Amino acid sequence: MDTEAATCYRHPDRTGLRCQRCDRVVCPDCRVQAPVGFQCAECVKANQQKVYRPRDLVQSPQLTYVLVAINALAYLPNFAGSSSRYTFDYALIGAAMTRFGEIGVAAGEWYRLVTGGFLHASLLHIGFNMLLLLQLGTILEPWLGRVRFGLLFATSMLAGSFGVLLLEPNQFTVGASGAVFGLMGATFMAQRSRGVNAFQAGGLGGLIIINLLITFVVPRVSMGAHVGGLIGGGLAGLFLVWAERRLPVAAQAGVLAAASAVLVAGSLWAAGQPGLLDSVG
Image 1 (spheres, rainbow, N blue to C red):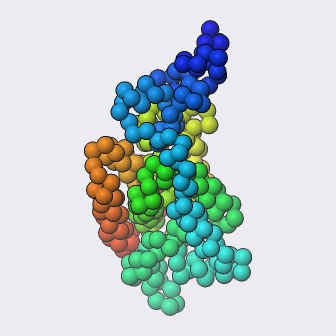
Image 2 (tube, helix red, strand yellow):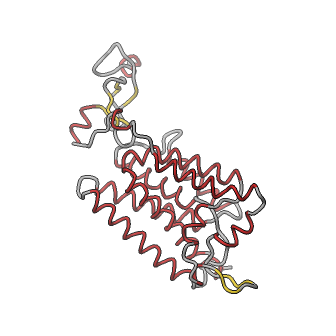
Image 3 (cartoon, helix red, strand yellow):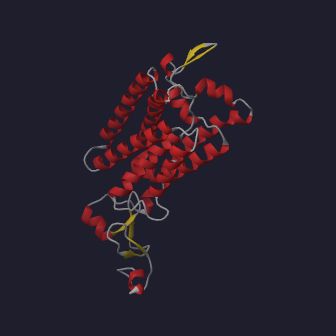
């Protein structure tokens, strides 16, 4: 019984891993790479999915590497002791009154919606975010292509910014966590649509739950960025899964761009409002 479970259903003399849709055991020669995970040929044919064979995935996730490099370059001032100045000038904040006058998104500094997402407070902060960005980008970018992946990243980041301004607009916030949480949400939706159990040992579901627990328990962690990014990226991922065989790529990109524009508009409005958590406090 155990021997049968461990051998390929086509090649009994070979061992393999289970198809993530039907649970058949398939050897390396029989399994077919799907956008997320792998399946046996019968499941791919039955579901008429687009097949991603290894030769189709040799293209490196170049945009992911570019995003990591931008974050790394933006962190360099920390080594020169200039992090506080960069935080003051470019971190996300809705509105604050300083001796130089009013600053923040409400004062017309809309660029903070983006620049704040490329700044980090410590090596641990940037290291953790960049590790997740590399892992998730390696999964998502070959599936979506650079344009849609870039728009997904932007949508997730802006959803995180909107969440921050909705909850705590008067707090300086930095980090790519909103975008990373959004990519986790999108990857979760993609895996779920392909029958992958994200809550198995070592799966993405457990990682999301652990990070949400940290978000709500550990002080000085941005709840708005994490939850906002996760919701925004999850909804974007759900849309991309639905649209994969229904809409052309250009239309999908247009919807993501429109969602980003709506999030910018929402953030501009929220920047001038009392924060929900500030009101509670």
